[in-house]
Length: 125
Image (tube, rainbow, N blue to C red):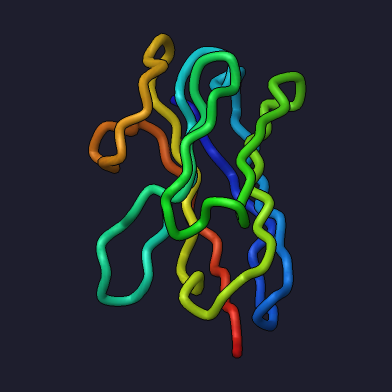
């Protein structure tokens, strides 16, 4: 069973930056789509960014130009660099990955098989 462990969350003022990391127990990111989701209180879980075959990236409109998703397959690590943070970015952030061989990146959480435990990001105004 693949395990994902996140780190890097915290509290920051608006305009600041944070970098999230997600280490996988195996070479998950070499063989499937991986993504970052977030969930704010009272809201549905939404996909923030995803990275597919050959490093192709997809971003939610709300974070385009501010967030960057990346991965280091040698370190089995997925990253999310978050710049120019806004109070509306406050949420629990989750990393997720699909089963080996599944390179398409759906926006719906139900299609992702492996999840991290979540890390809190709080942005104050």
